[in-house]
Image 1 (cartoon, rainbow, N blue to C red):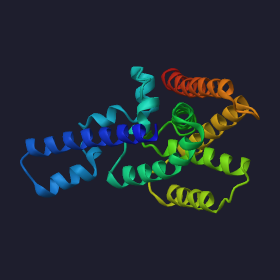
Image 2 (image 1 turned 120 degrees about the vertical axis):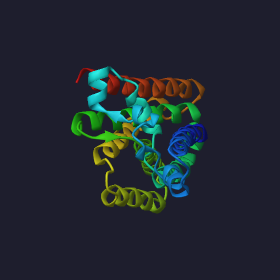
Image 3 (image 1 turned 30 degrees about the horizontal axis):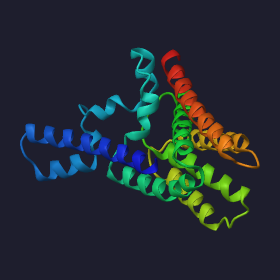
Image 4 (image 1 turned 180 degrees about the horizontal axis):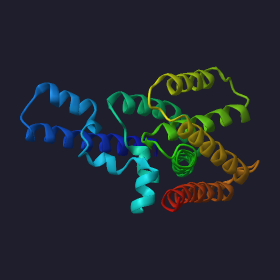
Length: 230
């Protein structure tokens, strides 16, 4: 599931970049323009990526509920997507190996929904995008796993510090989106742990998988509804 999520993000960015390059060619070829289009496709206001970003104003005025989900697959520039995909790959592998792809999918939805909901309610004036909400949700699950299994925490703490430093020092990064993603992933982890129980047999695993997917879907539905009805 982590590989699929990364592939979706990369495909979305590639499509945005291709559209931006096409617009450069329409205006007359420029090598510098092509490079800039590849690095920052959303610098072109006509890019379809603008229709996928989280925007409380657009959601409320035009009923564009889908932005609550699509915001987590749209990135502002090449550095943005590179950092997020690397973090999600390394953190997500441990989570998916422990819980499987269905629970991981539910956690991704819950983190995206939690991040969108936090932005819509606490920072509604901003336009947001990026998979860092999911990265923070995965990080919450990783920390929960380490604590529950009493494993060495150094690597997880280093990841937390790196992500936190990036949040503080990178211009335009949404603190509330990251907080919401972390809480969404953490809530999903606690629910899954409760549903798995102490034995974690096949029946408990199926119950946890179903619960994770329901929680994740509900989080996105609530975020979409808040955006539209706000």
